[in-house]
Length: 389
Length: 83
Ligand SMILES: Cc1cc2nc3c(=O)[nH]c(=O)nc-3n(C[C@H](O)[C@H](O)[C@H](O)COP(=O)(O)OP(=O)(O)OC[C@H]3O[C@@H](n4cnc5c(N)ncnc54)[C@H](O)[C@@H]3O)c2cc1C
Ligand code: SF4
Ligand code: SF4
Image (cartoon, rainbow over all chains, first blue to last red; front, side, top):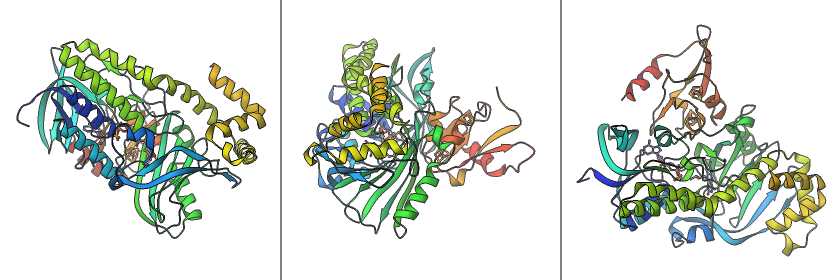
């Protein structure tokens, strides 16, 4: 840290922050990334599943951060029946403590400076204008100036609020999550398992994502509206006691996923939000690694353009490009999420039964969806409501 | 409106510092660092959203003067994050 003046300060070194920093620096900006934790990439609060296509657009898949390559997923209905469709293009269960680190290295290679144990506790203002951030770096107060601030501070984001954007996630949209990494168990290293139903996660789902053949991330998320009645940790303990009573617990974490539409405001003056901070998670799957990186990439590119042009108002372009690329889809997914949230056990069982009647090569996600519609006429109403609302 | 006879208490030793509670707090009333968490009491309206959101049931709800409040620890924690 030779100089305290930057073009862009990125708060948070998750996938969205590192990607924003990388593209801002590649576009010609002088960038500093600040991370409150001691290590980039740790602790891991994530099921770690991504598609090959999603990840490969940013970084070449590397065995050192891939715990399992997966080619199928299994949907398990409340009555125990299941379908095992193919995963188009394949996917991975990551080793995020290494993956996030590699993303930060890609940013560093573009010239980004990185400081860990650097907690941002407020925005720095002069004459009412935001001119940087106030930080606590290894317990020392340090003010750092920048022309643009990128808030990539995750589900716990506060930077946007300080800039005057309301980023509070409605409790109906927040998924309250608990996960354990279990070892000494038997899993199919090639398959992502999803369990549905009131017993495991009412309105949400429980996942078993393999990391090799004897280890897996086992976790679940449920809307805070549901968690009011029974917490995520209780559901998880019950499932693990039933299904993997002898497992060794390697990690045990809590977490939150904002499964909402994109935040109404993601740009304000010289501050932009990316990743979970901007609510850029896919609202149906709860996956936010790739979509956060896409948000980060667009945000970083636009920030660099704004610096090079000397036009901070150009940042508004970020919101337009994000909505054109993914935001519009997330709006539709959000409506689907609300329809799925109302499914009861019977609906899930019926969907599974009708999918099993399909020839094996038709058991894709689209095929299952169509079969479900055909065999479950009431769902047509739900889906019509989804697409018409 | 605040309910003066009820108050939120975050049990710091039990917390995983995951941020789910911060994400739903409408008042920006929770300070969360790498391994410290504290309630900014004068902002909190006791709406309970953080209590429901916490996956680990770490946030407790106390009736002032009725339930026992373990005051010591949170005060030390609050001190540590005052700017
Ligand atoms: C249990 C669980 C399972 C999940 N499973 C999947 C999955 O299988 N696949 C998938 O794609 N997604 C999954 N997600 C979602 C995914 O983890 C997130 O969407 C993704 O990590 C978002 O990236 P981000 O960079 O926006 O935020 P984060 O990865 O959360 O990074 C934010 C960073 O900002 C730092 N920070 C916060 N505040 C400050 C501050 N004031 N000062 C400095 N630094 C700060 C934090 O320490 C953190 O490192 C899961 C989430 C959870 C909770
Ligand atoms: S009770 Fe409401 S206002 Fe108080 S900390 Fe919790 S969520 Fe925030
Ligand atoms: S939601 Fe619970 S575990 Fe997570 S930071 Fe808040 S109090 Fe701690």
